[in-house]
Amino acid sequence: MYQPTDEALESVRQWFVDYDALAERGAVEEMADLAVFPLNLATDVPGGHAAVAQWSREEYVRTMTEVVGDGAAMESVRTPHFLSENLVVVITEAAVTVEGERQELTYADVLVRTTQGWAFQTMVQGGWGHGWAPASRG
Image (cartoon, rainbow, N blue to C red):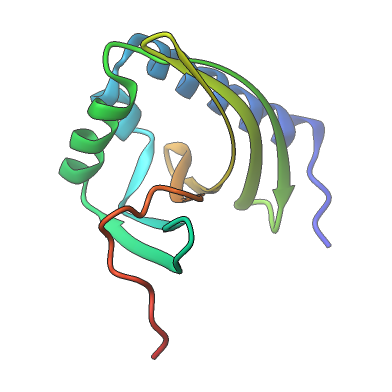
């Protein structure tokens, strides 16, 4: 089992500090610069089933512009789980305030180490799949 160094843990922590600062400013294009596309998403429809999708950069920018608007303040506690020195699953417990409305949520991101540094490649969060087709096997 891979045991991350203090430097590896700090690099992931700093990645999120940078990402959160962009979200707080509503800098969605710059947020997209920190991803690998196509971006994998896994979510569900409350009372339904899981739903999955892949987003292009354009889909991510369009959706996140709606989500963060002119900026979103977030308080969070993140727990990284390194699978290897280049792959980390980060579980986040967060409270987000968008346009004065506070929401508490739990989500996971899969970060991959690229030649330019960490990037997110998969987002997992319940409740985003309204109108999405349910996932099916095979």
